[in-house]
Length: 372
Image (tube, rainbow, N blue to C red):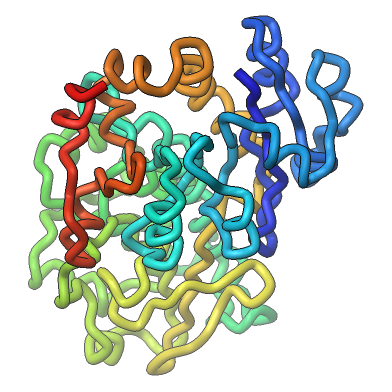
């Protein structure tokens, strides 16, 4: 199969779907790997490094036109719509329920699209989402460390245990992969860390891994209000169902917080768990609402592009190799977890949450494969 590694065009997106190492693995399996010129430069992978492992460097038009499997990181942007037709297989983060225009175009094109974020493994975990979630959680805490500084608009506190002064309080919502990433850094730097979680098994697992200064609290309204009042930083690490109209933290709740406190929304669901959160970017990462600084960059891992690209490529290559080696139909038949990530197929929407949100007819992918 011809696999095209595309250069990302999202502003401040520096990741690349395949590293020279993983591109070389695909070449060794007998596939043709086309790499758009400069695709890896943001992650410090040169074109020459790809050529050294047998990949072919091509210009944008050729990468899109010849590629059968389009291997990306971020969603498809309007400028890229022209390259997609019913012969293309798209493998990337799609976030279809956040981008209606993209979803409609993927459907109208007839292409096959598979979303990293919805692929599951045999345990029901999300193997292509978790590597970026960990980086997002850790990066979210590092952003808090940065923007808590007075020179960056914060209240001028160092998120660290400093002798003679009270330790800062960092509240993390969610003990999933991103929440644990944030908690590990915040806790190891000596902050007083509070984690709000509803899953008792997740809390028990977190307690075994985290230092003594991390307190695990059941997430209810009383505990949330306590955390809003005493926290210097709140880091949201839970995804919010986009069909929901309610919020976890409402605008009026910000009045409970310390003046100058900071909210970091790692999940970055616009007006989701946190009513006042809206997506930002690395150029203009923060804004203020009700006297509270907000950081809601929607691609935090791009700040650590080389690490992010390596971890993402290592996670996705088994799936890319299965599609390329077996063909997309057989790969979908053989791998139930990959099937869970199927978003569109020949004009059919196969992701239920997106169908529910927008009222688009849903096709069950498990029933779809019976027609192959």
